[in-house]
Image (tube, rainbow, N blue to C red; front, side, top):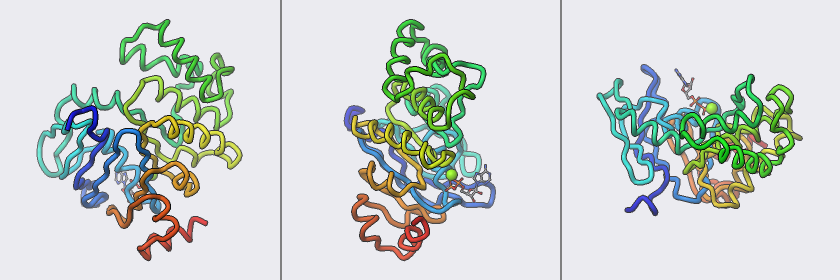
Length: 257
Ligand code: ADP
Ligand code: MG
């Protein structure tokens, strides 16, 4: 498969343990270009670990991670197996932007500087060009008027939109979200959900960990329900939410209402 048509992220039979604690027990995830995949499941089921493995932030004991058709090279075996090629890890990570629950903006930089930082310092792009792009992206996520503000001067919803803008400025192949709305008050959640929906409508490839079933239902092409480190059920959102097959998924969905 050429890199043009290969899935952006492919994870095959991934096993991950922290010491004796097996957290992922053979998980397969495919994120084709332009698709939105949501990961749902109880706290502790392994969702964040899976995202971090996709972003090569974790070692793993078995299985493959394939980025745009390019298999990740591993070094070592078993408990000591880590992504082994620093240049490859860098290349892949700069192509995957991660958005966290806690925004993680740089407090001492303005919003515009936050968005410009990585393209200028990591990608070595021209500062003036990056600034034009950064302002356009901030406009697009609805905070074009906040360029000169500092993160502490923004609401949580505005900070999270700034964090998404920072991810977009890297022009990534995919965006990875880990509970992007969990730290927000309900009325601020909606402004972040709107941005995520716009990105989905644009055909962005996204992997979204969320506790928000309405979001998963509305934006996903495919939903994966993780239970204790295994995929218990997966499928298109209509099937998963309307006619869940597994007892555990039915119980989980009932608990989220
Ligand atoms: P989720 O995001 O679905 O809530 P996580 O992936 O954060 O789940 O965690 C899965 C399991 O792995 C939990 O039992 C958690 O306590 C454990 N875990 C996560 N990170 C670490 C770590 N750095 N060291 C040890 N155990 C961890
Ligand atoms: Mg988590």
